[in-house]
Length: 313
Image (cartoon, rainbow, N blue to C red):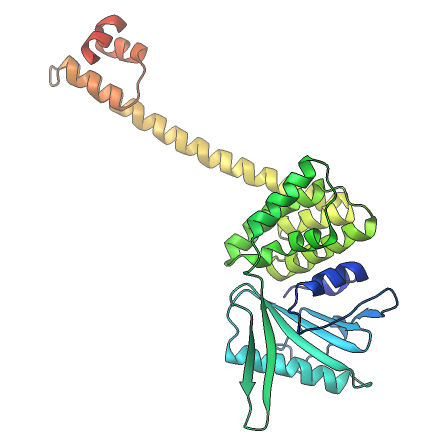
């Protein structure tokens, strides 16, 4: 987990946090209205040791504490133990008012279920795993694209789902590709308010902090769009240009090698023709296989283009 999600998640409005909560199962009943107090507490989680990290989100919603962990892999036994420590540690260090604590995992690797870890016959730690596999990220993106093209209003739920689509696929490469696909869309959307835009970008930034290092070009692109900071955007553009130049150099080298190989083959065919090692027909067939144009074949064999066409026919 990279640093930064604590600050970015503070941009999520009550309405959008409510839309996020709507994705949870019905039996996790959390109500939010205009009078509900919401406070992000992730930064306040105290780790027992450096290797023990915080949950991805800790938020106080009225009189309860909601902890959310994002998982793109299966929840193993050691992770269940770690989750239990999250709750016990927070309850002991930060929960002076003995508020109810709800812990859950949003997963792209597993189906929705109740997971448990038994300490002994009296103490069993249970928590829900909420699967995002039920969502179709392609349909979500297609719907957003259609609404953008037809200048239709995009609902809060649709915006939250769009921001969460990187969590709806498996594998780091697929997740990064998903970010590559939604970031341009996020910048094209006509947001009805600054609060809505901040909420959507906050989720994308938080997820981005999970998968990208501080200097990753894609993270800088998200930051540049969200914070309107030219330095992030300029760094992103320069890095993309550098990558493109490097790619161009590699492609140029490849084309140079192919051109050199082609010239060597043609020179060999010329030599074989001059020494009567191969017939004109064989030479023509080989040159055609090398995708040489009729004009080039004419220059090599000394035949007219019409004669070459007759032979090939």
